[in-house]
Length: 287
Image (cartoon, rainbow, N blue to C red; front, top):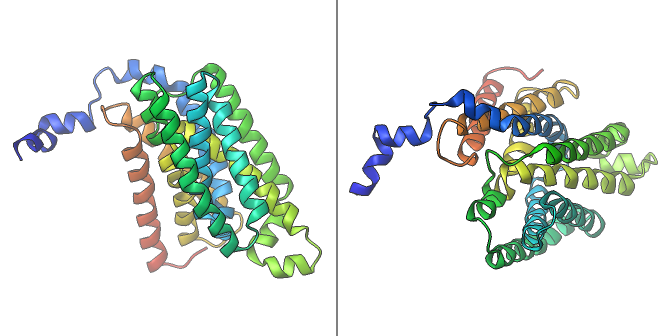
């Protein structure tokens, strides 16, 4: 037990929070902070529809294939962003085409998840580069975005947001009552497939910031928190986006002051936000 003592003493706290040279380090993560803020806004909005359509499991499935694509790109020495994007979109389209019903969709995801994770682990095992690059694909990195990547990540988020905005009304109708939407002539299959593409795009960006294992912390938890305190179709997306930005940006800012990965900070902020919203929702009336 003696080897655990440094984790609970002053030295242990210094690993979690240590803000020496914080101003200098802050300059190194400007691109990552901007990318995290953009991801938070788009991810929070997309996450609302993920919750309404009961697709939290799909987010995790897409992230595993995104991880496999990024790991393959890392092994081949090509763009990790492009590899992650290809993996995400392929998984999203496959889920959208093969699993229109919840039961079928979960079966498809259950098949894709271990396959994608296995491929990703294989590619990382064959990769002889830096261990931090391998670890970052799973749990995120503080300094993970440079100038060229920032442009690509913002462009991907913009495309995803544009898709959601274009199909917003039919997507909302289909999310709340798919049977009535289909009876009213809404092209539910097309709407669902377009949304899956948008979701795949956002997941590919999230993998670059927080890693494949923690995508749910930005695409599910903030939206779930917002839905605990409001039912307004306007308030919920705004709250979800705000909560996601708080978790992503706040996680980076806190991680910068310690030697731990970004993941514990992002997930803790996101989880605490959900707990607060759950308490508020249980004692008050949703707006």
